[in-house]
Image (cartoon, rainbow, N blue to C red; front, side, top):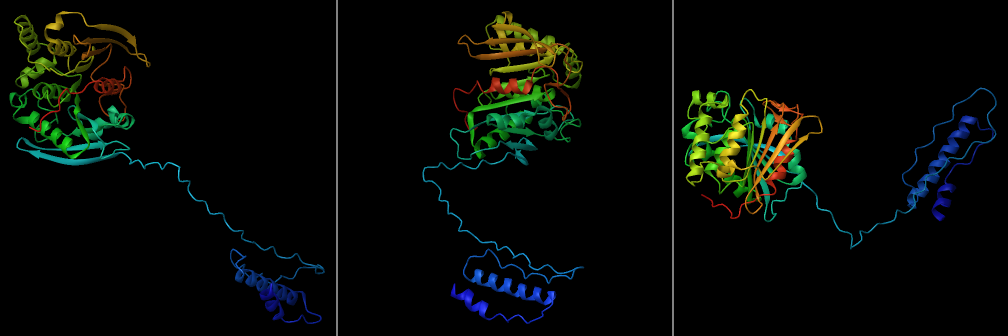
Length: 396
């Protein structure tokens, strides 16, 4: 190492009788010189700091001092990626963002959950579930209580949560009981259907796999949407809701919720249409119903009337299958299944024994939830994902 030899030659010669402190300065100078030489040769990771002068200690100085250790840098191997190693595509995290929608029927805010791993170029697209909250609730509250966003990540679908405006209803209820909000061309059905169509156009949504579900007043509005827009929604979920046109004003709404008057009219109309061979004024899309038989807000008779209305003439027959079971957390329920003549899903009715006015299997993070009982969210998703439209809906 010529460079090292030259550097060492520059060092001053030690003087005779040098003190221990002077000897320390000399060793520090030698160590620095060696380090500089190694660094110049590319063999040292970084120049070492000069050694601090030795501090005098009581007693005789040691005859010899340890030689400082030098950290040498070995060449790091260069790792080249194997050409045949597949590269994993980065998955996008789920997002939950608030938006606005307006059309001639009005304006509403909504929150949209896009699941983790969403691909905007996916073909034919993702399912879409429209979730309608109950009175006094909000999209965030409803999402937390139903835990539907977690299921969206698990199964890969989008979830929209429209928010009812307090200006439209002081209790933020969907206006299922007003004739102006029970038709196709105006009111809240037209507004919510327009929002659904926009989501289909703006996102990678499969138009044949669009569903709507709700709780209480939201369930009643979901039934209205399935009835007025059967080409748009492939299936409906009604939790603690009411049948189509169960009321026509506020007094009849309270009567229907109590299980009297208007419901008798619905049942009579359904029976008359069945006898005359007419199609009942009811959802023609597959329907899944959850209702507690101890619901004191929306009487259990509503769940039974909704099933009878939806099945029409078939309501006089026994269901295709029926089973009584106990949920894992101890809540009893009866699960009835109706199918078409082709064996396709038509109606599922989950009657939860001892259940009140709350989303079964829900999280206490949201309002109006009951952690006991069957998991309504998971069962609705299972039911929905078995069903799709035979023909894609039009843009109108």
